[in-house]
Image 1 (cartoon, helix red, strand yellow):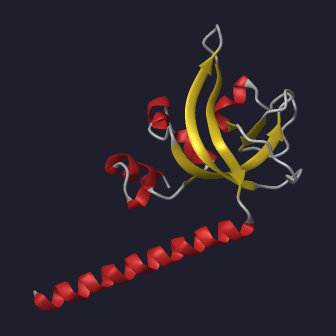
Image 2 (cartoon, rainbow, N blue to C red):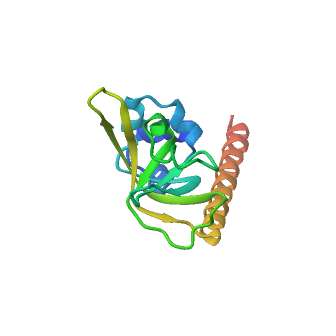
Length: 160
């Protein structure tokens, strides 16, 4: 997926980048602030665990079974995405896949401690059917590219 991010950055807006970019929290952890800002205002999908903060906001975290003291806390700022949506019927445990517009909005306190880095606008959970369709389209796309590559190799050898 990191290669996909770099290709999107280098090529800009194109057909490869038109669909929501599938990301993982592991990939987020590898990004510095400048790299993260290249994903600002980009539609993404990401899997994680949903939690409600004490003030009623929602976050998506990379970690299961967070204690209430860790939900939305500063020391977990890079591992949590604040969501601007409300959710109903969310499983109390288990991974959900969320899609939305990623905003990189670092917020610091007076002591220059990072409080919050990511926000997902228009966030919504994806149904199992939607996740399976995305996977199916990805497999079909990869197969198509593989066939084109084979055709290119075989036609190149015959003419040479």
